[in-house]
Image (cartoon, rainbow, N blue to C red; front, side, top):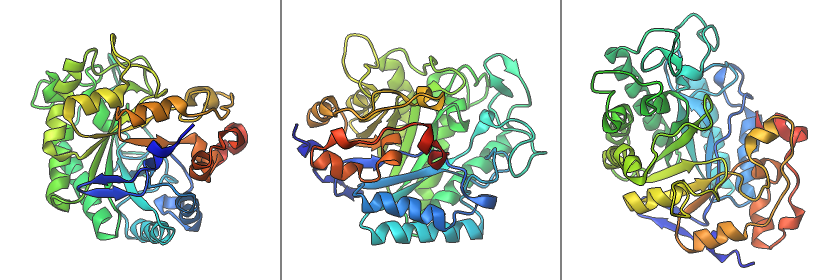
Length: 365
């Protein structure tokens, strides 16, 4: 099994990487008062030392009172947190890696009464936490404008303290995805209605970030069909519908699309073996990241429910990557269990992969 495709350099006009391996963003709660400390520095340094081309951090929240549900999730706006993130960047760079923060607002996934500002109402496009279930008031246009600015300010800080790119979290039923999803977005203003209008919030975030960071700084946009509220939810049922959603976001200034699926090998639409990253690359002619149970035999929901995911070979992944179905591969749980995942794959030792199970789950969350 040749792994050459995985270890070719990635040469994007705005981002060069030594290989095609990314560390996927995975939520952690190890930053008291939102400030990443020495343990967070060590966590990311270890993966950079293992040879990962680009680390995408855990979700780190923007400066909005409803952005977080837990004070131990890192933020990306306080002076103390930014100082902590600066140490993370320095450690990753010293280990020969590159790193991007994932900028996050959790939207309707935040239960009222949680987070650093428990009295503040949760933020949703139409006041719904689930389709058809009204739990609050829709976001006002003024507050939407403030949230857009908070994303842009965070991206500007990322560039200032030395990060190599930024990722916008637009997936999994969080705020940006809440606007994209018809089930939660029933607005009748410029942010709701057609698929293109439901993309407007994301478009404005990308445009505001681009204005902050300039033309040469890489912007990654993560999206998904599935939602934590509904694993069978879909933004698009055909490639044409997917293009309606993504094209405005792409044109706003996204460089790379991170296409989140639970199993990378599953076809996204009928009559084609292409996965979500493959279709996105084909439709937009932009670089894409695939993700979802890479080198594991079980998807992540089952492992959260007490199951285990054992290591498997990556021959199908390599075949798809070599065929240029997608450009980059994000590895999640396997990198938690195996910080040396890159070396194991490069030397063909997939049979030495450690099992991912509850015994190491604490390190993830």
